[in-house]
Amino acid sequence: MRLAMTAELPDDPDAAVALQNRLREQVDRSDPRPPRFETVAGLDSAYDEQGNVVAAVVVLDAATLEPVDTATARGTTEFPYIPGLLAFRELPTVIAALEKLGTTPDLLICDGQGLAHPRRFGLACHLGLLTGVPTMGVAKSVWGNASEPRDQRGSVSDILLDDEVVGRAVRTQPGVKPVFVSVGHRISLDTACETTLALAPRYRQPETTRRADHLCRTLLRENA
Image (tube, rainbow, N blue to C red; front, top):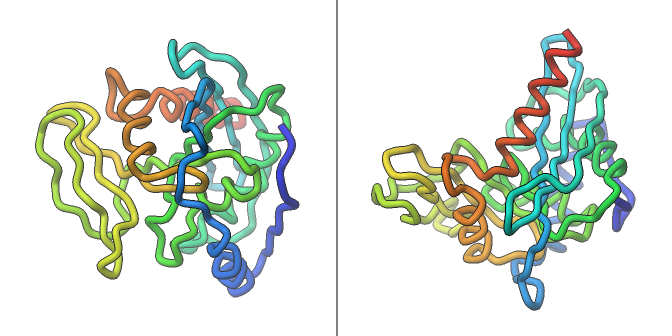
């Protein structure tokens, strides 16, 4: 898979913030025409205490949820842990994994935030611009304020930051905590929520995220 633009990867936090502020104006919050995703990819990263990083990309058939392609990469990070700048710890290794893919997925799903971010430019937005592929974030924790959705599968509530809707809490399974969905790039929030539900028929998280997370954990154990 080839990137649509060259990745800028500053190692200075101030430069990273400036880059987010500059790039966020390019984010497209609308659907491709039409929004049909035949293949969907989950991306995830994991770290150990020594700064080693592993990244995994798992591509699934959107209809059957069967694997189509996988790619992994290993690396190290020295970028400090700063809320709002976590993308800069993950991007180098995630990009390396994406470049190993033999196919270009129709949709990328990040285990993290998109517009639900203090500068409206989380990892999903960044990767969407870098790849040119529709991208969304499905996070396990909320960034912003959201009321608890009703207990039925498919129930949602808005995520607000500074009185702006930046995502939705989505109940994928009854009696289970919601996930937190936000736009990354080239997708609408409605489509992102519908896709999340379609990819989570049995568990809280989408199958894309579950499989990428499992592969990351396996790689990290192998590094130990």
